[in-house]
Length: 476
Ligand SMILES: *Cc1c(COP(=O)(O)O)cnc(C)c1O
Image 1: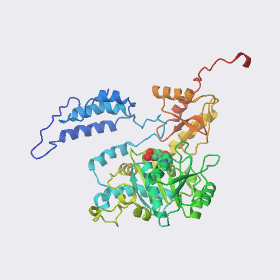
Image 2: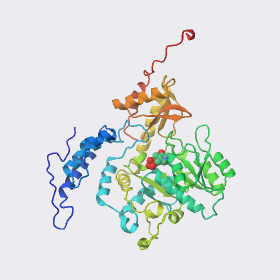
Image 3: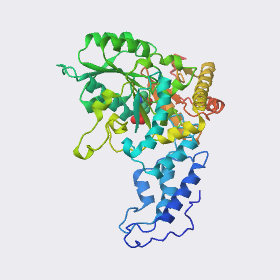
């Protein structure tokens, strides 16, 4: 077991110095910072996972007490009990859901950002940090092919980004009279669950447009729905569906939105990172005409949690929708770039800074290389599946998600294999559903994932067919 950096250190509970409630916190600071330093240098990340709540409560004991337990006990507890009950998302063989692969530079700067305690809601309070965040956003703006007048901010995640963008879209539409049947959003069934969640929060209806046979939302489908439906204020297209990594047909969808004067929001929470990769950039054609866009740098852009970049091609409607007013806020300079004015939030930390720092340190070329490398890895794995005689690719991968099946396997077979692979530490790879069938899904976001290691794991999918009931005599 790793030695806690506070082991052997006596951290006295300091009686409050005269007039100071917290006493002298120097020692606490040094213990916590040393711990962070050690953790940042731990590579690979420790393999760990959740424990049942009751089990964990017993192991942790009572932690929030009237006299306080002190730094040594609190940090020791984190090191020995709490942290081992959290899964580090960064392992190169973690291919489940959307894993994470932050650069060490970004992780280290997360600690720096925390230390600086910046209020990054308003320019007045957070100008320096906001300038840097805007530099990172400007890189994304260039990748989108948007004008330099585009603007945005960082929010917690794709869910909040989608909600904020759709609220801005509705506010822009609300210059027209409210339609008799209420406001509506058009998206495909493959859109992320957060689009429906935003619609519920906004009390608007979701109208589903069908996808083509490959799974893309197309302009033709959107156009047909827009022709037949009143009150649509936004179309939400996806650039990289979470389940299959498919990019909707953005160019023709943009045509349909333009024709009907409807806001186009592109959800690139996972797949937006592909804009940086020359080999797939053509799939995003049309995105330059979107009105709003999100990407989660904590997914495929090597930033730590939690970080979503939200961008508006024209930020004016977003400002009109999101600026909060209150007497105590009257002094805020509304002509300045205030991130608070662009999303559903007011207080915010400068959560874009770790992303900015890593981009500044490594350069955008290295980012393009890193995204390309994960694409190459997923293509190599897809090729191995294609070449295998016991596996079948169920969809042609467009980005870095690979869906495949083991013909003849049931949902239980997949679950048993997945649980065993997780237990042995071979890989974290969980089943999903595709066209009504249970299949396996691998999502690649880590440039250090090695295709040969993953392909090795694929071999273990060979011999696990459970013995079925013996064939009936007359069937022989
Ligand atoms: C992950 C994801 C979201 C939600 O993002 P969070 O950061 O988890 O809130 C939204 N849309 C897509 C396409 C996603 O992949």
